[in-house]
Amino acid sequence: MTRVYNFSAGPAVLPEPVLERARAEMLDWNGTGMSVMEMSHRGKAFVSIAAQAEQDVRDLLKVPDNYKVLFLQGGASGQFAAVPMNLLRGKKQVDYVNTGSWSKKAISEAKKYADVSVVATSEGDNFTHIPAFETWQCNPEAAYLHYTPNETIGGVEFHWVPETGDVPLVADMSSNILSRPIDVSKYGVIYAGAQKNIGPAGLTLVIVRDDLMGDPMPGLPSILDYKIQADADSMSNTPPTYGWYLAGLVFQWLKELGGLEAMEQINRRKAEKLYTAIDNSAFYHNPVEVSARSLMNVPFTLADAELDGLFLKEAEQAGLTTLKGHRSVGGMRASIYNAMPEAGVDALVEFMVDFEQRKA
Ligand code: PLP
Image 1 (cartoon, rainbow, N blue to C red):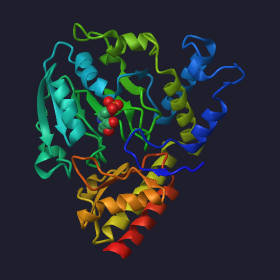
Image 2 (spheres, rainbow, N blue to C red):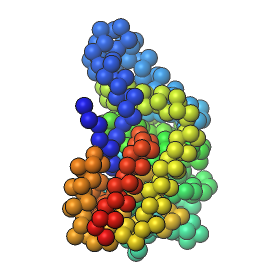
Image 3 (spheres, protein in one colour):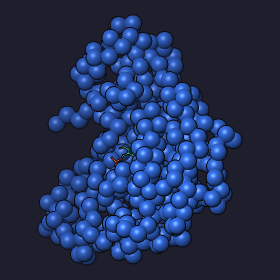
């Protein structure tokens, strides 16, 4: 068996110890004689797996007691609709910050339900910086303010949290959740598709403050209704049981590693190595303003785009895979989520230096 270093933006690399454990338990979880995949979600075994996963993610993120943690489906894209439908509560006005492709998608979905005000945008410079908070045109009457703390495609990350006062702050943390500690109490809603730092695609994590639940928009489907799902322990219908179980294994792996403080240190070290290699070279370039660079997604271009194909081919041969940049940005993108070992980043840097020496 050969494992590669997979730099995919998502679905993405999972921690090897998690995959090993899942493999060991595949046919017989804990003496039950069945796979977790085959269990009733209402049975004792799965209910204990689900509760442990919730407790572990609560511990990792230090989720306060007045927040519910939901394990849902529909992806982050489902939440683009669920957020306005749950949070408008009779209001019409919502604020959005536009820092890239995923912000734009969230905005266009919200426009179906609400009057969206884009309070700040970096589209003018091709999403390579984050507009200074002082320039944001926030509306104190908005039902909420939505932003994307990490733009997976552009590689732009907030290293600060907007202070929105009484207006609930909503964050799409799909590509940086669990990468470092956060203060959950600053948020009204946090949501994330699982397929980067949490587990397999198909699971969506939602953390929602109690007072923001109930009183949804008429016609809201029950499976998107935070209150209904919270009251049903995320089991108003059959939940994504196997994804939930794997997420639980990832949470345990993070705890064993030393929690999010330890994870942050590792992530900072990995990102630093890659950005340093890029900045020390005239051949590679990352367009993002230094203060807004992502620790998770590192886009870069080669000085000669004609060499892109060869770079990707040789990288693949060296066991470094899925480095092609998003079609909207071009070039390369290395996603270095929690589960990417530091040795993977070292191998990438070594390959980049060697490629430059041979081709530049
Ligand atoms: N938001 C961000 C920041 C993302 O990176 C993605 C990508 O997968 C999405 C939303 C969309 O997530 P999903 O495919 O789970 O709907």
